[in-house]
Length: 256
Image (cartoon, rainbow, N blue to C red; front, side):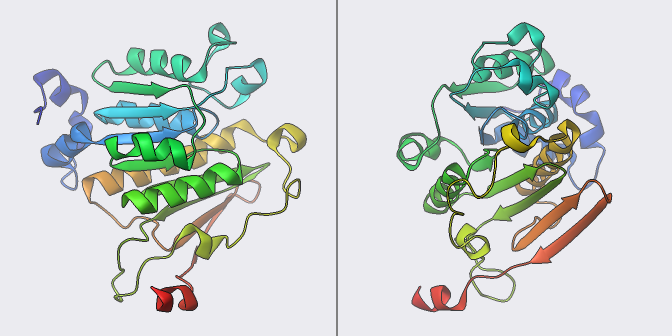
């Protein structure tokens, strides 16, 4: 285990001053290996804040390139990186922000098959993808690997975040819910239009992505109450946060 250097202690001093985190919590973050799916609207603030926080290893999986229309919300990229792979652009930005962070990038699309080859290298998965196929694949992969999943979504002016740990039981002794307890089936193709079709306010991705980064820090340091079994909803036009609880479906729990 690599201990914190003097430079890192100074860099993360504001964390270390917090009794809930302290030196021990900062050391946990340095030892953490976090995989982020997508270096886009949600992945950008997640990667920036986790890099700044001192996560030791950040994995990035994305097969897309930076385009001009991305820059309105994907703030880890800039005009000079247009046409670059998003993984490379994000990696270079993180290196400028915090050279202590090790970056492992994959210029590929996340899938269950991909996860079987690579996910064992990480102890936390964060899904910032923009489609249900990847969201279901991330949820299934994290459950199989028995690691926590932080997943978020945005659309126009609204966003949501939840945390999944279906391999563990809650305080009541019942298993925590899965992604399919929240969304039993994928919506029909074309029912939910993409942001390319309907638009999205850029700052919204910053709000939701930052919440996702905060949930990751809580999970890694063992502080607070992560959003397990709770879906946090944000309505930016009304400036309102709401949280709804959800549970594992009884029939599924009984079968297990």
